[in-house]
Image 1: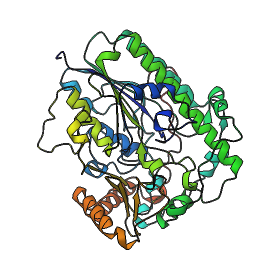
Image 2: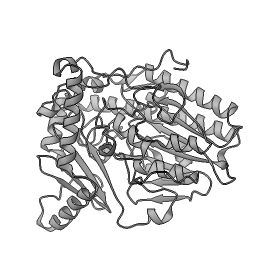
Image 3: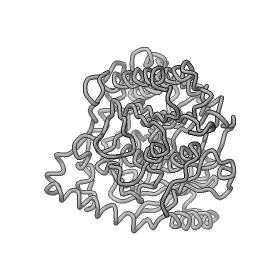
Image 4: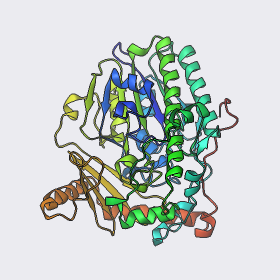
Length: 478
């Protein structure tokens, strides 16, 4: 270790809408601990996941590569360690690398670069083959996603108990196991992921009959691909105001519950004397629509779903707010730059270090996200360049939004003659990253192969994971 190598602490949540936080400008959502982290570091207002679904997003976070580069198409294509992770690189450079909490890789026995996994939550069995069983043929299954909205309320679940166990384990680690430096620790929570059941004290924080709801008008998101998703997930119905309010109340309660757990981890870091020598990052694997545009869950390319919160603090990190588009592909390069590691190999990582001011000031920075999983019959791609956001759907019309003039994505510019040049530029920019039609075909071939490997569509339908079980009794290591 050199004197300038910091420890690294990555804190992750699951399904955190990037607008649902005080640091993001919300006057309603109470996230005091994340707000303090934002107040002493850099916040990224235009950060995106690489795919708005758990398993692919987490594989990209581990490897620093886009989904199409590593074949992590869906929730039945988990990370196995076949591509090197930032854990491999840090471990090889002398860092002690530990994870506590949700990973959603294939199995702890795989060499993923994270040898010390505590309370590790991975996919169950073969993952969600049910969700992709007939996707290559243009069909999607129907699930009762509406029940997740209708059953929202106060209480405890396996997931909230699990997150408390993750917090306790992280606090113990920071108190007892940080004498040997440098170390890298990933603390990964499930909240505010469904089910929409929030611990009572956090649910009650938002017990306000005047709690403002987002507009449930589809507007620009009245799109054929979005309609396929809504029908597949059973949310094509219009929820009542009371149903929406109760679901939002629970979701916000889970956001504040998660923030309290983050606060306990940050307090333990401070008590251990490592606040000033640790690079701290907070992000979520993807967002959550939370009722915006009449949508729920993730899976889509609206800002609430595909954009993520991203905060960075620690030694040498400026107090700043950055609006340059950034991505989860930038996490691995950031950790490697902090540790002063040059990744081996001839194929460079596509991202940039978030510690590099020059990269973050580049006016032509663009990022991309893609989706190939359940609730869709063909791929969708998001390309963000400057203040324009382009969405391309294989076989359907595209969308184009000017996020500077229209942050709520109310107006789709794709059909306007005066936006034709921007639309063409964005389409060309996406093709500099990948060929959308070729990638869609590649994903479907791989999905068909995996379905056939278990005996075909009927057999694949037995492999569904609506709820990933926690790894053993709460409080016990996996």
